[in-house]
Amino acid sequence: MKHPRFLVQLVKRERALTHLKKREMAIFNVCGRYGQYQIMVGPENSHHHRPIEINGRVHHLFLNRKGLEALPTKEEVDHNLKGMIIMNEVTVHLFDKNGDGKKILVQHIERDVPHARENINLAGDEGPKMLRELEESGKLADEAYQIVQKDILRSIGS
Image (tube, rainbow, N blue to C red; front, side):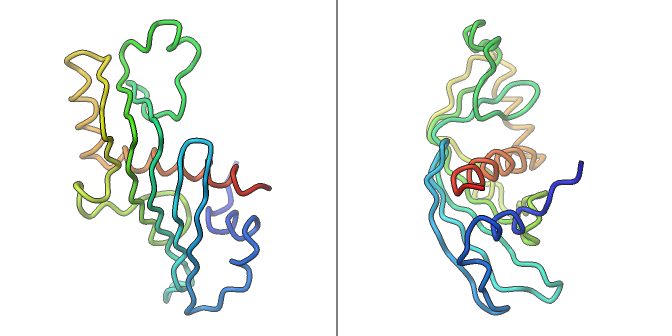
């Protein structure tokens, strides 16, 4: 099933975006279930896309071998979160140049990849390696973007 572009879904939920002219931009704040975000919808570019930039903080993210999750599963909780990294107070700077919600542009790992104030490693020696691989491949930013998108869309209603 094909999902509508992130920007299209935002416009449906945030009335102020429906009246934006080509060269205008909009900035608004969202307090979501998992964190707080400032969303900047940029002016339309030559390809008729609007870039989206999201800055904010996510309370917790959970990293396991399968990837990044907003919440651990019941099974993971029952096993005391073994094999996971709990990322506390994660700062996100996510830039989507097309506004389609698919891929984050990672130009600088230090700036464009989500950073946690504290990582609680319950994955042993494999934990830091798992985190480093996701950071370097850009998957950490992409997976965080998917979580943040869902949180934003859920928070601003349907």
